[in-house]
Amino acid sequence: QVQLVESGGGLVQAGGSLRLSCVASGRTFSTYVVAWFRQAPGKEREFVAGVSWTTGATRYTDSVKGRFTISRDNAENTVNLRMNSLKPEDTAVYSCAARHGTVIHSTTPPYDYWGQGTQVTVSS
Image 1: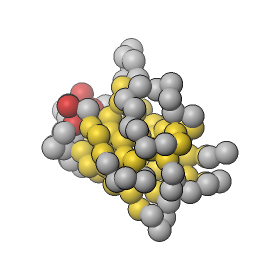
Image 2: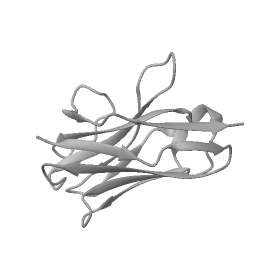
Image 3: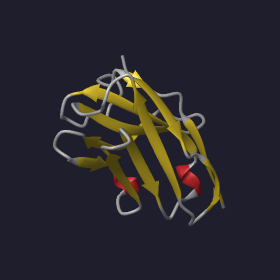
Image 4: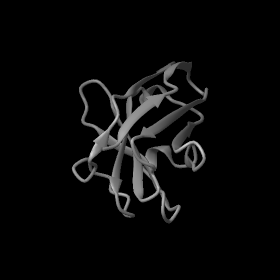
């Protein structure tokens, strides 16, 4: 069993930056894909970014390319999401998810483990 805990959310002005972290307990991420999803009020959950721990491959949704960077920290068993040039439309609850394997899926069903989420609010 894998438990995921997110941290790093908060309130920031447009153009600012935040770094989200997803820490795993119970098992290392070594054979997993870890992804960040977000859900804004009244909208469906959407894929933001993902990383394959085994291959190092990354994937981003188009709206965050060039602004967000996902990275892994082997020593801390953590996946970070660095978010720069934040926009009000980035406001959402951000959740990390994990699944065993190497393919970075952009849909929710293949992911087996989810954190509780952290709120990110970007003011204009």
